[in-house]
Image 1 (cartoon, one colour):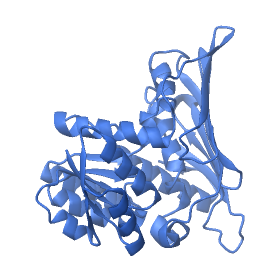
Image 2 (cartoon, one colour):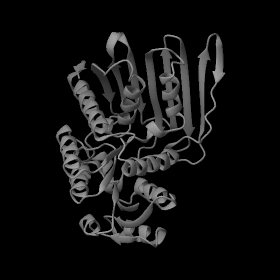
Image 3 (cartoon, helix red, strand yellow):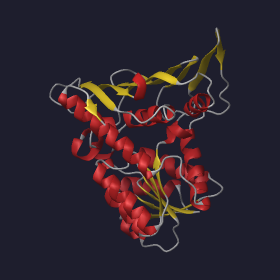
Image 4 (cartoon, one colour):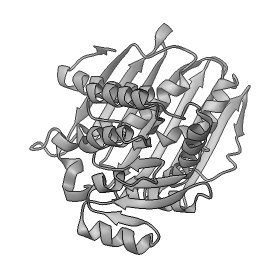
Length: 338
């Protein structure tokens, strides 16, 4: 499958690496905004044509699919152009920074009969996916409670500091907590859709209260079940935990690395089985650099077979809406109905 890539920042270069190494894909074109990133893309992927304007990339006749890895405020404009040009789209999360823009991307994909997949790569993790598999097979009974927590630092600025500009990032909940809302909903899929959210957040810098270094939310599901989503960007390294209790047992998954994109993480998964604590084998390396590889493979399979992607446009829209509702709860100081 002949791919174009729009965006060649820190994460975009990982997308390029994954496309280039996949035996079922060919990276033929890259669009990058700065002279520096264009030079780096040309040096690292000599067989790909590099463009300054994504519109020139889309003018090619030989592209079948495009991955978009840009600052969040550009997702709608560029994503809609990709779909309207007749290409399948792998869009980084967040899908967009408004629900209306998500709706439009879904409508454009349907109009042109193209596959729209959203980069919620944690669904494709050997570790976090194993948690889902165990829940789905009844290993802990019906889930009752979950804690999904991230402890990390530093938080990347992004090109030109876009991640610290609320007009361009939307809000910081749309950055990493969006993944945690997505997998909480995924884990509780058999219980029903979330009903409400109550969120709190605080910034270290009183002069930039919109940059919420610490964030927590309680997501309420039917019949009193709930998940706690918690993040701090004021810790160190990158440490993520998922704990889930069910009617018949519990799971505890842990992942740690010096950085989120490390190729040498440590991770583990345990569960209670009766009175015993059992270590569950996770046969493949876990982490977003590995999940990205699986995400691309699944995207290609979805396009070729006309199948449903791991995370659809509707999944992406739900996650964006959830993050916006959580921010609404922060500002209101109380729970918000979904």
